Amino acid sequence: MSTVTLSNIKTAIATTLGNYAGLRTFPYQPDTINPPFAWPTLQKVEYHTAMSGGLSTYTFSITVVVSRSTDRYPEKALDGYLDYSSGIRSVLEADPSLGGVVSASVVESAGAITSMDAGDTMYLSIDFSMTIYA
Image (tube, rainbow, N blue to C red; front, side, top):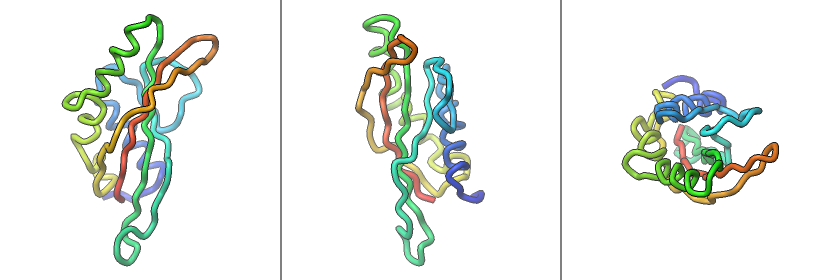
């Protein structure tokens, strides 16, 4: 396992998400909007979750954004990302070590479908909650 830093974890999440066909991924929120895309945001870190402080637990929100060019397409696109066997959960959990960067990881949940407005264009987003042990 490589040195665990927040930057390494975010990059590993983005790299692993890149295995979802057609999804642009970033380790940080991108400056320009070009859907579909995703990025991780740290929600919290719990230190000393194992004896002798050897394990930290990180909780991330993974945001996926799709275009809202029609009424039905964005919901259908989000359905694909939510699919248990082929969606975001499946892609991230295919390698729980995220390329050897962390000890283990699991996608806990998804929800909070939200409308976004950027530059007079509407988008839909959904957040996935991911727990990482490193």
